[in-house]
Image (cartoon, rainbow, N blue to C red; front, side, top):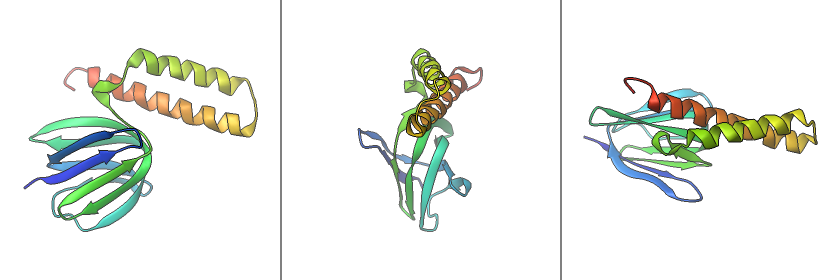
Length: 137
């Protein structure tokens, strides 16, 4: 018996499908959600979000947000969420270089915080893109 999952960002509906399991990074650590899970509302952190459907695992890079779990559905409202097979490795590596340059320029605290966030996002995208391309992935 699958559970319905919706992953939504401000820009788009990332996924709407019935899945067998969801593994998500939360402020309290990774959680695994199966159908008929007890209700839960939690804050997502940046990290690897994975779903399993029919024995096939699909990976996403998620960057904050909220997850609501009800016995029959899961709703993820993510600040940003990229499916690993949609990540352009070259673009992510270029974003990493730009963020590192901004960090080395030592501008205002706000600029530094934005550059650090951009760097974390680029590093997560690179990691997810490489996981996708790894043998056996």
